[in-house]
Length: 234
Figure 1 (tube, one colour):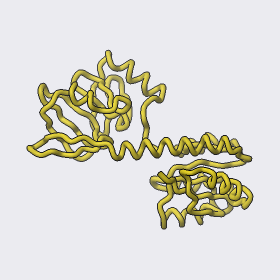
Figure 2: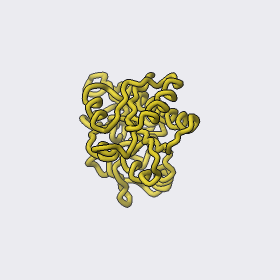
Figure 3: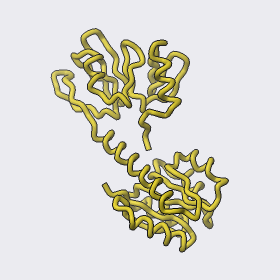
């Protein structure tokens, strides 16, 4: 898996340093170098980019200003001489924040994290199950499942775009799903935790649905969320 990366920095020596680091990493490939955010914006409109190494203080437009105008941006590692922007940078869900001058071991740690996130996302996007519904054998992507509801000897699989009624038990289906993502929160419900929007008392908000969570499961779910042990999107 090659991760296509772009360097954006107005300092030639900073770009040269990052370029040298990238050349030493087998899973990284450099597809562009930019002197400012305007050039980067053009590249993002013309080709696929997986990772941006982004400086903050640049002429005309800062790196953070560009991020605020991007819809569904690639993964971002900020590379800056200024620590004061770190908190603001993480508000944009950046993967890492590197302070100049950047050592190779610190660079390696950051890009290894990107590689792991990309591998997890790729696996999630490819994972699926086949279920028999409406006399058809249907393929359902796991990432599209919102929740599963038990109805005696049947289950209802609610996805982002459909509702499938399947002849099986909740227990049987639950045991076939990845436990890091799918959690039972009620004797009648299993939820895709990556689809949870909020916790409201004894309910989870999943898309537009309100799913009850019982006391026996609540402490476990709260602990998982607060300890950040769940797989999250990039």
